[in-house]
Amino acid sequence: MQKVTGHAVHLPADRECRGAGIATGRRSRRQGMAGSLNPQRKIRMKLIEQSWEWAQKPDRPLECIESAGRTCYKSEDKITQGSAERFARMLVKSGHESVIEHAVAGVRFITNRGVTHEIVRHRLAAYSQESTRYVNYGNQEMTFIRPVWWEQSTEEQKALFIKACESAEDQYNQLLASGWQPQQAREVLPNSLKTEIVVTANLREWRHIFRLRTSKAAHPQIRVLMQSCRDGFQRQIPILFDDMQD
Image (cartoon, rainbow, N blue to C red):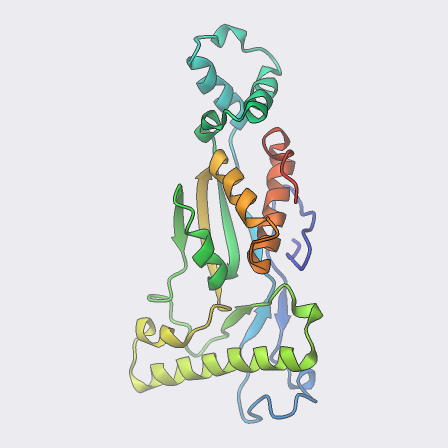
């Protein structure tokens, strides 16, 4: 298990992720951040790295694509050992990507809600996301996602970020205590709140997602996550994804 940090990383092919937790609840790590914390506060929050893992690996995607594609010309008699690789590579090279849609893959992302707001804009996919309406985060360790630019931040900037997360956690718990339901108290939760989302899409759509979300114009947080995810797809199905680079 490896975390996704400020650069795309190479991850194990069978289990691509689970971010390592970064404890933030020890006062000794906060000393020197003058005025940033309430000394009486019981720290519960933590920061973790964003991460991803396979929810559904593609099952013989090249064979599936070739079988579907050859239906168009009734050339199934040309299917031989290794022909699926050649057929799929030809499709990518020629830009005839509609046939690639017959194969699908699913991924579980652990990231922040700002990133998932962007992910769900891709329409040709199925989504199941952790709900802030029905999940009660009260009186437990609230988890936030560490920004990928964290290491380049000053100590003052880090302290301000932590203070903002702690304040959101405090206000959320106070609103629950006052009688608000979780679906009401969630209004104070920030984009940095950790969330999980399972995304299932066809392989053509994954190519589209990676093309947009790994570009230099993409937000840094989603770009790093998708660079790592794309690298995993390249290891799993290199013929369909090894043409995609930063």
